[in-house]
Image 1 (cartoon, rainbow, N blue to C red):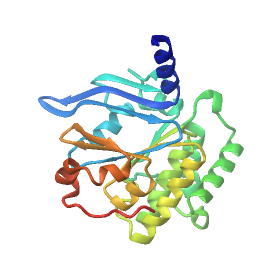
Image 2: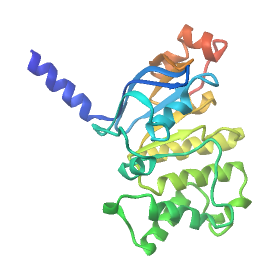
Image 3: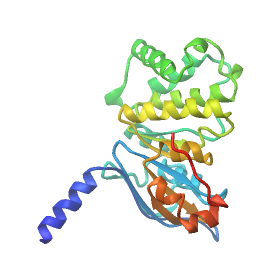
Length: 262
């Protein structure tokens, strides 16, 4: 029986692209994250919600290597990323977007995406300039910016900048993509458009961890939801469970209302 259980645990571990174990992060005396644990199954989307200051972006910064002074364990495809710089984690297959987009304003959309395609990969996946250009063209088409491909990034509106941010992250060929409020600031039509892009990325085999405040978006694309509050894990489950959870309603949703799934 013990051997059977161990085999089942090993099989479950193989299916996890990301395993976070007992992550605790402090800024002086402030507890930003307190004993956070969760798994992300390969090929799935895990949404992360919670009030402002709940620790969501701090968690992203810890997973991607921007913060190193944490306790606990982070495993990517079963390998610890302890001590690895953000660029090393990127080359392993972890990419992210940022709430505030910061493209190279004075160069074209094509040029912005080519930078990631050329410099954001491991040596094993390194492409020629010509191949990087082809990859960039394909990604720009995927996010719906083909008609802007030669425009400078500084000329883009909010929605277009978000799409460029996505293409730049995807140019590194990630297995795991972290999205930090990628639909924030978009109008309802743009939100639906971005949701379809996220679903398409996921269908291509990319696992996704996404922070989002727009309930329609995060509930509509996520397979599971993780709820943080004051740096602690409040709840985890399928979207239908989370929107009915009284603790979540009290801490974050404010009132019990139906969230329509897209």
